[in-house]
Image (cartoon, rainbow, N blue to C red; front, side, top):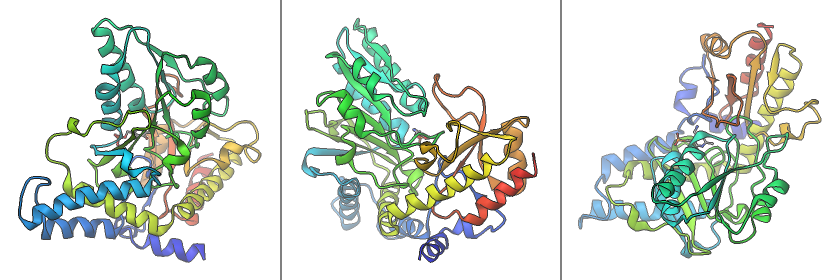
Length: 389
Ligand code: PMP
Protein backbone atom coordinates (compact mmCIF):
# COMPACT_ATOMS: atom_id res chain seq x y z
CA UNK A 1 0.00 0.00 0.00
CA UNK A 2 1.75 3.08 -1.34
CA UNK A 3 -0.20 5.52 0.79
CA UNK A 4 0.68 3.75 4.04
CA UNK A 5 4.30 3.44 2.90
CA UNK A 6 4.44 7.18 2.23
CA UNK A 7 2.65 8.11 5.46
CA UNK A 8 5.18 6.15 7.47
CA UNK A 9 8.11 7.83 5.71
CA UNK A 10 6.62 11.33 5.97
CA UNK A 11 6.23 10.85 9.72
CA UNK A 12 10.01 10.49 9.98
CA UNK A 13 10.69 14.12 8.94
CA UNK A 14 10.44 16.19 12.13
CA UNK A 15 10.64 19.54 10.32
CA UNK A 16 7.80 18.55 8.00
CA UNK A 17 5.42 17.12 10.58
CA UNK A 18 6.39 19.81 13.07
CA UNK A 19 4.64 22.52 11.09
CA UNK A 20 1.48 21.29 9.35
CA UNK A 21 0.95 24.78 7.93
CA UNK A 22 3.98 24.41 5.73
CA UNK A 23 4.43 22.45 2.51
CA UNK A 24 8.14 22.09 1.80
CA UNK A 25 8.44 22.16 -1.98
CA UNK A 26 12.12 23.00 -2.38
CA UNK A 27 13.90 19.66 -2.05
CA UNK A 28 15.99 20.34 -5.16
CA UNK A 29 17.63 23.21 -3.25
CA UNK A 30 18.19 21.10 -0.16
CA UNK A 31 16.43 18.03 1.18
CA UNK A 32 14.96 17.70 4.66
CA UNK A 33 16.48 15.11 6.98
CA UNK A 34 14.65 12.07 8.37
CA UNK A 35 14.98 11.35 12.10
CA UNK A 36 17.32 8.33 11.69
CA UNK A 37 19.87 10.57 9.95
CA UNK A 38 19.68 13.12 12.76
CA UNK A 39 19.91 10.32 15.35
CA UNK A 40 23.01 8.87 13.68
CA UNK A 41 24.78 12.22 13.83
CA UNK A 42 23.87 12.86 17.45
CA UNK A 43 24.84 9.32 18.40
CA UNK A 44 28.22 9.70 16.71
CA UNK A 45 28.93 13.11 18.23
CA UNK A 46 27.89 12.01 21.71
CA UNK A 47 29.67 8.66 21.78
CA UNK A 48 32.79 8.56 19.62
CA UNK A 49 33.56 11.86 17.94
CA UNK A 50 37.26 11.93 17.00
CA UNK A 51 39.45 12.70 14.02
CA UNK A 52 39.85 10.06 11.32
CA UNK A 53 43.06 8.27 10.28
CA UNK A 54 45.07 9.90 13.09
CA UNK A 55 44.51 8.59 16.61
CA UNK A 56 45.26 5.16 18.04
CA UNK A 57 42.47 5.07 20.61
CA UNK A 58 39.07 3.41 20.10
CA UNK A 59 37.01 6.49 19.18
CA UNK A 60 39.56 7.48 16.54
CA UNK A 61 39.74 3.96 15.18
CA UNK A 62 35.98 3.73 14.98
CA UNK A 63 35.81 7.09 13.24
CA UNK A 64 38.40 5.91 10.71
CA UNK A 65 36.37 2.75 10.17
CA UNK A 66 33.21 4.81 9.70
CA UNK A 67 34.86 6.92 6.99
CA UNK A 68 36.19 3.84 5.22
CA UNK A 69 32.85 2.12 5.63
CA UNK A 70 31.12 5.14 4.12
CA UNK A 71 33.14 4.72 0.93
CA UNK A 72 32.03 1.11 0.62
CA UNK A 73 28.47 2.07 1.48
CA UNK A 74 28.45 4.61 -1.33
CA UNK A 75 29.92 2.15 -3.82
CA UNK A 76 27.17 -0.31 -2.93
CA UNK A 77 24.53 2.42 -3.19
CA UNK A 78 25.78 3.26 -6.68
CA UNK A 79 25.85 -0.39 -7.75
CA UNK A 80 29.56 -0.05 -8.44
CA UNK A 81 30.45 -3.21 -10.42
CA UNK A 82 34.18 -2.87 -9.71
CA UNK A 83 34.52 -1.47 -6.19
CA UNK A 84 38.21 -2.36 -6.11
CA UNK A 85 38.89 -0.11 -9.06
CA UNK A 86 36.98 3.00 -8.07
CA UNK A 87 37.80 5.94 -5.87
CA UNK A 88 35.45 7.71 -3.45
CA UNK A 89 36.40 11.13 -2.15
CA UNK A 90 34.30 13.06 0.26
CA UNK A 91 33.85 16.66 -0.74
CA UNK A 92 31.75 19.55 0.50
CA UNK A 93 29.21 19.17 -2.29
CA UNK A 94 28.67 18.89 -6.02
CA UNK A 95 30.33 22.22 -6.72
CA UNK A 96 33.56 21.25 -5.00
CA UNK A 97 33.49 17.78 -6.58
CA UNK A 98 33.10 19.17 -10.10
CA UNK A 99 35.84 21.71 -9.50
CA UNK A 100 38.12 18.96 -8.26
CA UNK A 101 37.61 16.92 -11.41
CA UNK A 102 37.99 19.93 -13.70
CA UNK A 103 40.81 21.82 -12.06
CA UNK A 104 42.81 19.16 -10.25
CA UNK A 105 42.33 16.12 -12.46
CA UNK A 106 41.63 17.42 -15.96
CA UNK A 107 43.45 20.77 -16.20
CA UNK A 108 47.00 19.40 -15.72
CA UNK A 109 46.31 16.80 -18.44
CA UNK A 110 45.14 19.29 -21.07
CA UNK A 111 47.34 19.84 -24.12
CA UNK A 112 47.22 22.37 -26.91
CA UNK A 113 44.23 21.70 -29.16
CA UNK A 114 42.24 19.66 -26.65
CA UNK A 115 38.47 20.01 -26.32
CA UNK A 116 35.92 19.78 -23.49
CA UNK A 117 32.19 19.38 -24.08
CA UNK A 118 30.35 21.70 -21.67
CA UNK A 119 26.58 21.61 -20.94
CA UNK A 120 25.81 25.33 -21.07
CA UNK A 121 22.10 24.93 -20.28
CA UNK A 122 22.78 22.98 -17.08
CA UNK A 123 23.67 24.21 -13.59
CA UNK A 124 26.49 26.75 -13.53
CA UNK A 125 28.37 24.51 -11.05
CA UNK A 126 28.83 22.19 -14.05
CA UNK A 127 30.00 24.97 -16.40
CA UNK A 128 32.32 27.30 -14.53
CA UNK A 129 34.82 24.59 -13.43
CA UNK A 130 35.36 23.54 -17.06
CA UNK A 131 35.93 27.16 -18.03
CA UNK A 132 38.44 27.39 -15.19
CA UNK A 133 40.21 24.24 -16.38
CA UNK A 134 40.51 25.68 -19.89
CA UNK A 135 41.78 28.98 -18.48
CA UNK A 136 44.41 27.17 -16.42
CA UNK A 137 45.56 25.30 -19.52
CA UNK A 138 45.65 28.54 -21.50
CA UNK A 139 47.74 30.19 -18.81
CA UNK A 140 50.48 27.70 -19.64
CA UNK A 141 50.07 28.16 -23.38
CA UNK A 142 47.71 25.26 -24.23
CA UNK A 143 44.70 26.44 -26.20
CA UNK A 144 41.67 24.42 -25.15
CA UNK A 145 38.29 24.67 -26.89
CA UNK A 146 35.04 24.50 -24.94
CA UNK A 147 32.49 22.80 -27.17
CA UNK A 148 28.84 23.53 -26.29
CA UNK A 149 26.86 20.38 -25.56
CA UNK A 150 23.99 20.19 -28.10
CA UNK A 151 20.41 19.95 -26.77
CA UNK A 152 17.20 18.97 -28.52
CA UNK A 153 13.82 20.69 -28.27
CA UNK A 154 12.85 18.62 -25.21
CA UNK A 155 15.95 19.83 -23.30
CA UNK A 156 17.63 16.44 -23.62
CA UNK A 157 21.15 16.07 -24.89
CA UNK A 158 21.12 15.72 -28.66
CA UNK A 159 23.33 12.68 -28.84
CA UNK A 160 23.25 12.46 -32.65
CA UNK A 161 24.75 15.94 -32.90
CA UNK A 162 27.08 15.19 -30.00
CA UNK A 163 28.49 12.16 -31.82
CA UNK A 164 29.46 14.46 -34.69
CA UNK A 165 31.22 16.84 -32.28
CA UNK A 166 33.38 14.25 -30.54
CA UNK A 167 36.93 14.19 -31.94
CA UNK A 168 40.16 12.46 -30.96
CA UNK A 169 40.94 15.65 -28.98
CA UNK A 170 37.81 15.45 -26.79
CA UNK A 171 39.16 15.08 -23.26
CA UNK A 172 35.95 15.28 -21.26
CA UNK A 173 32.19 15.33 -21.68
CA UNK A 174 30.51 17.09 -18.79
CA UNK A 175 26.86 16.15 -18.29
CA UNK A 176 24.00 16.12 -15.80
CA UNK A 177 21.88 13.16 -14.77
CA UNK A 178 18.64 14.99 -13.90
CA UNK A 179 18.18 18.62 -14.87
CA UNK A 180 17.58 20.97 -11.95
CA UNK A 181 15.07 23.20 -13.78
CA UNK A 182 13.14 20.85 -16.08
CA UNK A 183 13.55 17.77 -13.93
CA UNK A 184 14.15 15.56 -16.91
CA UNK A 185 16.33 12.49 -16.84
CA UNK A 186 18.94 13.41 -19.45
CA UNK A 187 19.35 9.88 -20.90
CA UNK A 188 22.96 9.66 -19.84
CA UNK A 189 23.58 6.08 -21.07
CA UNK A 190 23.16 7.42 -24.61
CA UNK A 191 26.14 9.70 -24.09
CA UNK A 192 28.53 6.78 -23.99
CA UNK A 193 27.27 5.61 -27.37
CA UNK A 194 27.85 9.08 -28.80
CA UNK A 195 31.21 9.54 -27.05
CA UNK A 196 32.79 6.20 -27.79
CA UNK A 197 34.60 4.12 -25.19
CA UNK A 198 37.56 6.37 -24.51
CA UNK A 199 36.24 9.81 -23.68
CA UNK A 200 35.79 10.39 -19.93
CA UNK A 201 32.28 11.43 -18.92
CA UNK A 202 31.79 13.46 -15.75
CA UNK A 203 28.29 13.33 -14.36
CA UNK A 204 26.59 15.83 -12.08
CA UNK A 205 24.16 13.66 -10.11
CA UNK A 206 23.12 16.43 -7.69
CA UNK A 207 19.44 16.04 -8.58
CA UNK A 208 19.31 12.29 -8.92
CA UNK A 209 21.05 10.83 -5.84
CA UNK A 210 18.30 10.28 -3.30
CA UNK A 211 15.53 10.72 -5.85
CA UNK A 212 15.80 7.68 -8.09
CA UNK A 213 17.98 4.58 -8.34
CA UNK A 214 21.42 5.51 -9.66
CA UNK A 215 23.62 2.82 -11.15
CA UNK A 216 27.11 3.77 -12.24
CA UNK A 217 27.23 0.61 -14.37
CA UNK A 218 24.16 1.72 -16.30
CA UNK A 219 25.22 5.36 -16.57
CA UNK A 220 28.70 4.35 -17.73
CA UNK A 221 30.31 7.55 -16.46
CA UNK A 222 33.91 7.89 -15.26
CA UNK A 223 33.25 10.53 -12.63
CA UNK A 224 30.06 11.04 -10.63
CA UNK A 225 29.55 13.90 -8.24
CA UNK A 226 26.73 14.83 -5.87
CA UNK A 227 25.83 16.87 -2.80
CA UNK A 228 24.92 15.02 0.38
CA UNK A 229 22.61 17.80 1.58
CA UNK A 230 20.30 17.19 -1.40
CA UNK A 231 20.27 13.49 -0.50
CA UNK A 232 19.08 13.95 3.11
CA UNK A 233 22.56 14.12 4.65
CA UNK A 234 24.04 17.18 6.36
CA UNK A 235 25.20 20.26 4.44
CA UNK A 236 28.92 20.28 3.69
CA UNK A 237 28.89 16.65 2.56
CA UNK A 238 29.15 15.18 -0.88
CA UNK A 239 31.16 12.71 -2.83
CA UNK A 240 33.19 12.33 -5.95
CA UNK A 241 33.16 8.77 -7.26
CA UNK A 242 35.59 7.90 -10.02
CA UNK A 243 36.71 4.72 -11.69
CA UNK A 244 39.95 3.78 -13.29
CA UNK A 245 38.77 1.87 -16.33
CA UNK A 246 41.19 3.90 -18.39
CA UNK A 247 43.26 4.99 -15.47
CA UNK A 248 41.36 8.18 -14.54
CA UNK A 249 40.57 7.33 -10.91
CA UNK A 250 41.07 10.42 -8.90
CA UNK A 251 44.24 10.32 -6.76
CA UNK A 252 43.40 10.15 -3.04
CA UNK A 253 46.61 12.02 -2.26
CA UNK A 254 44.85 15.19 -3.36
CA UNK A 255 42.74 15.23 -0.19
CA UNK A 256 44.70 16.07 2.92
CA UNK A 257 43.02 17.46 6.01
CA UNK A 258 40.36 16.44 8.45
CA UNK A 259 37.26 15.00 6.77
CA UNK A 260 33.75 16.09 7.69
CA UNK A 261 33.28 13.05 9.91
CA UNK A 262 29.82 13.87 11.29
CA UNK A 263 28.70 14.72 7.76
CA UNK A 264 30.05 11.43 6.44
CA UNK A 265 28.18 9.60 9.21
CA UNK A 266 25.03 11.42 8.13
CA UNK A 267 25.63 10.42 4.52
CA UNK A 268 25.89 6.73 5.38
CA UNK A 269 22.70 7.00 7.43
CA UNK A 270 20.95 8.82 4.59
CA UNK A 271 21.94 6.18 2.03
CA UNK A 272 20.72 3.45 4.41
CA UNK A 273 17.44 5.29 4.87
CA UNK A 274 16.93 5.86 1.15
CA UNK A 275 17.69 2.25 0.25
CA UNK A 276 15.33 0.97 2.94
CA UNK A 277 12.60 3.36 1.80
CA UNK A 278 13.01 2.16 -1.78
CA UNK A 279 14.35 4.48 -4.46
CA UNK A 280 12.10 3.03 -7.13
CA UNK A 281 9.06 3.89 -5.06
CA UNK A 282 10.42 7.31 -4.12
CA UNK A 283 10.97 8.04 -7.81
CA UNK A 284 7.50 6.98 -8.85
CA UNK A 285 5.88 8.84 -5.93
CA UNK A 286 7.55 12.13 -6.83
CA UNK A 287 7.06 11.60 -10.56
CA UNK A 288 3.34 11.07 -10.02
CA UNK A 289 3.06 14.18 -7.85
CA UNK A 290 4.99 16.17 -10.47
CA UNK A 291 2.75 14.88 -13.26
CA UNK A 292 -0.33 15.82 -11.21
CA UNK A 293 1.02 19.34 -10.72
CA UNK A 294 1.94 19.67 -14.39
CA UNK A 295 -1.48 18.45 -15.53
CA UNK A 296 -3.16 20.89 -13.14
CA UNK A 297 -1.07 23.81 -14.40
CA UNK A 298 -1.87 22.86 -17.99
CA UNK A 299 -5.50 23.62 -17.19
CA UNK A 300 -4.63 27.11 -15.93
CA UNK A 301 -4.12 29.50 -18.84
CA UNK A 302 -2.22 31.99 -16.67
CA UNK A 303 0.71 29.61 -16.26
CA UNK A 304 3.39 28.34 -18.55
CA UNK A 305 5.35 25.22 -17.58
CA UNK A 306 8.98 25.32 -18.64
CA UNK A 307 10.34 22.48 -20.69
CA UNK A 308 6.98 21.25 -21.91
CA UNK A 309 6.16 20.96 -25.55
CA UNK A 310 2.77 21.67 -27.09
CA UNK A 311 0.57 18.91 -25.74
CA UNK A 312 1.25 18.30 -22.08
CA UNK A 313 -0.64 15.04 -21.80
CA UNK A 314 1.23 13.57 -24.72
CA UNK A 315 4.51 15.09 -23.71
CA UNK A 316 6.91 12.35 -22.79
CA UNK A 317 8.98 14.98 -20.97
CA UNK A 318 6.29 15.05 -18.27
CA UNK A 319 6.76 11.35 -17.69
CA UNK A 320 10.48 11.83 -17.28
CA UNK A 321 10.18 14.68 -14.80
CA UNK A 322 11.75 13.53 -11.59
CA UNK A 323 9.55 15.51 -9.25
CA UNK A 324 10.68 18.94 -10.45
CA UNK A 325 8.17 21.30 -12.08
CA UNK A 326 9.15 24.83 -13.07
CA UNK A 327 6.66 27.39 -14.28
CA UNK A 328 5.82 31.05 -14.52
CA UNK A 329 2.69 33.16 -14.29
CA UNK A 330 2.07 35.18 -17.41
CA UNK A 331 1.62 38.44 -15.52
CA UNK A 332 2.80 37.99 -11.91
CA UNK A 333 6.57 38.11 -11.44
CA UNK A 334 8.13 34.92 -10.15
CA UNK A 335 9.58 36.49 -7.01
CA UNK A 336 6.20 38.02 -6.21
CA UNK A 337 4.62 34.63 -6.78
CA UNK A 338 7.20 33.10 -4.43
CA UNK A 339 6.28 35.59 -1.68
CA UNK A 340 2.55 35.04 -2.22
CA UNK A 341 2.95 31.28 -1.97
CA UNK A 342 5.24 31.49 1.07
CA UNK A 343 2.61 33.55 2.88
CA UNK A 344 0.35 30.50 2.58
CA UNK A 345 3.05 28.07 3.65
CA UNK A 346 4.13 26.85 0.21
CA UNK A 347 7.91 26.95 0.26
CA UNK A 348 9.11 27.06 -3.34
CA UNK A 349 12.16 28.32 -5.15
CA UNK A 350 11.72 31.44 -7.26
CA UNK A 351 13.76 33.68 -9.53
CA UNK A 352 16.67 32.25 -11.55
CA UNK A 353 18.03 28.79 -10.81
CA UNK A 354 21.80 29.10 -11.37
CA UNK A 355 21.20 27.89 -14.90
CA UNK A 356 23.98 28.34 -17.43
CA UNK A 357 24.14 30.90 -20.18
CA UNK A 358 22.18 28.81 -22.68
CA UNK A 359 19.35 28.26 -20.24
CA UNK A 360 16.15 30.17 -19.60
CA UNK A 361 16.99 33.78 -18.95
CA UNK A 362 13.71 34.77 -17.34
CA UNK A 363 12.86 33.96 -13.77
CA UNK A 364 10.42 31.26 -12.76
CA UNK A 365 9.03 29.31 -9.82
CA UNK A 366 10.33 25.81 -9.17
CA UNK A 367 8.43 23.20 -7.19
CA UNK A 368 10.59 20.22 -6.28
CA UNK A 369 9.05 17.25 -4.54
CA UNK A 370 10.25 14.50 -2.30
CA UNK A 371 8.83 11.48 -0.59
CA UNK A 372 7.33 13.48 2.29
CA UNK A 373 5.15 15.51 -0.09
CA UNK A 374 1.51 14.56 -0.50
CA UNK A 375 -1.27 14.69 -3.07
CA UNK A 376 -3.05 17.06 -0.73
CA UNK A 377 -0.13 19.49 -0.78
CA UNK A 378 -0.09 19.49 -4.58
CA UNK A 379 -3.85 19.98 -4.78
CA UNK A 380 -3.77 22.83 -2.26
CA UNK A 381 -0.95 24.46 -4.20
CA UNK A 382 -2.94 24.14 -7.44
CA UNK A 383 -5.98 25.68 -5.76
CA UNK A 384 -3.86 28.61 -4.56
CA UNK A 385 -2.36 29.07 -8.01
CA UNK A 386 -5.80 28.87 -9.63
CA UNK A 387 -7.00 31.66 -7.37
CA UNK A 388 -4.33 33.92 -8.90
CA UNK A 389 -5.63 33.52 -12.46
N1 PMP B 1 24.36 20.70 -9.90
C1 PMP B 1 23.03 20.71 -9.86
C2 PMP B 1 22.25 20.04 -10.94
C3 PMP B 1 22.38 21.35 -8.79
O1 PMP B 1 21.05 21.38 -8.76
C4 PMP B 1 23.15 21.96 -7.77
C5 PMP B 1 22.52 22.67 -6.59
N2 PMP B 1 21.47 23.51 -6.92
C6 PMP B 1 24.54 21.91 -7.87
C7 PMP B 1 25.11 21.26 -8.94
C8 PMP B 1 25.43 22.52 -6.84
O2 PMP B 1 25.30 21.86 -5.63
P1 PMP B 1 25.97 22.43 -4.30
O3 PMP B 1 25.54 23.85 -4.19
O4 PMP B 1 25.42 21.58 -3.23
O5 PMP B 1 27.45 22.29 -4.46
